Length: 139
Image 1 (spheres, rainbow, N blue to C red):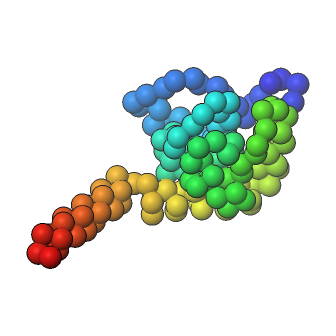
Image 2: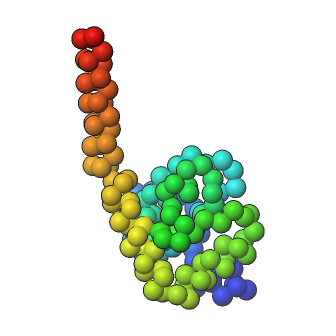
């Protein structure tokens, strides 16, 4: 990473959990997640958004449904590291854009992915199913 000028701004912590994870999420500004294989809906992306990080990722699985292209992050269909370097550099060069994306990411996460929101959505689904099942029995 030394040749591209991003070394002072980057870290690759690998797998972290607990307090170390919380600390990294609070201290970071951009979440770069370029999976090469299949992905479902990575919780790590939602956690990063909840911590106010702009996300840079690929269009695998549900990632494009979570990350709004150009609003809460960038989606690039590439395995070329230089493509991701360019996006990260763009964000570092345009701190106003980075700030807007961070705010949008955090807002989307708070409105859609926090445990209390998801719990309420599931409760509503269960209640609807129960109500419909009760109506079917009366017919």
